[in-house]
Length: 103
Image (cartoon, rainbow, N blue to C red; front, side, top):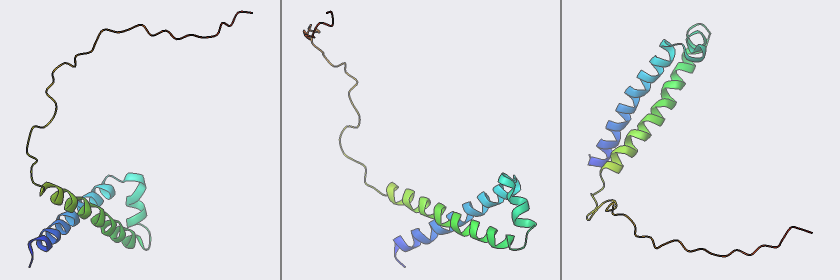
């Protein structure tokens, strides 16, 4: 199996674990009265399942994006500025003529 496919499957698994933990925290802390909505109503299991599935999609995508971005080769050369002060010339008075408002 190619390394990229293994990386993707591994990140889906971690995303699923994060989604389970997040959904358990939402239900356990009763955020927005989710505990009552999911555990006390008919079809609440469907809402819990969809919450886990959609959170898995989000968290797995984020995990995979972070893993791919960390695979980039480090840039050569200096990073950032030198923190040397910028030499600025003396300020010059610039005339700005304006029409008089007096009548």
